[in-house]
Amino acid sequence: MAFRLESPVFATGDPIPVEHTCIGRDLSPELLWHDAPPGTRSYSLILDDPDTIVGLFTHWMVANIAEDQAGLPEGARIEGIGVEGVNDFRRTGYSGPCPPRGRGMHRYFFRLYALSVPRLPLMPCFTRHELEKEMAGHILEVAELMGTFER
Image (cartoon, rainbow, N blue to C red; front, side, top):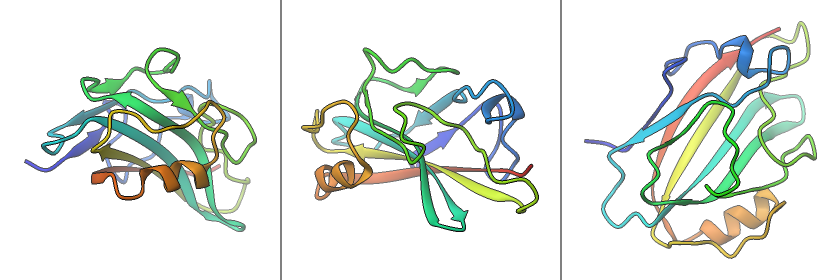
């Protein structure tokens, strides 16, 4: 089986429920993953939107998720699970979909990276650049879940 990332609240290509966006409760959706590749020692997660006028916009980053973790609950509090980076809203933690009104549908990509190392040397509030630099050479496989949102 292939490495998979899914959510019980939306399927790939479907709209992300309002509860998980800036006009709802802005809670991270429940995420589940299956069939990690052999040799997986940890995971990192990135949520981004490639459809903004400024280019790729990062909404959430989590690193150092333990290899025995099989998902994240809705509204995940990451303390004790991993470490979070600073998103492009300049906040630590999850910031849900929030495209400008009337600008059409945006796609939101949740990407889970299976890594060959148990821990990346990252401090809380790391940047995307730091995360990508530390993951380089350690990525075994990437699982992806894409949802949409428009307001």
